[in-house]
Image: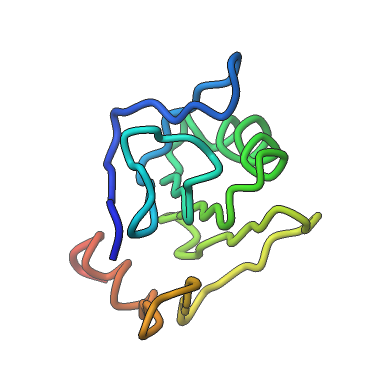
Length: 124
């Protein structure tokens, strides 16, 4: 499965760039203590009113430039996930079913977004 880290922690992308994603996944067998982009399978940010612009406009191109394999922006208000990969200019917007099958995984990770967001906001 690898190592899952939850904020706060530092992710060093180069000597001058350190970010703190909300969630980070480092694949199995990689030196998690390094916490460098070359070891990252997935970085996740959960939007808030304070972080939306920073996560989309500042952090996203940095993750892409440093070849983080996947960058997900979870927008609870829109009940969507923006999926970014290094070489795209527009995200995949996922509103129903998120499926992710990283290299080396036996089975994909599947998330029903309606169910996920309903658990986040009781009464939905």
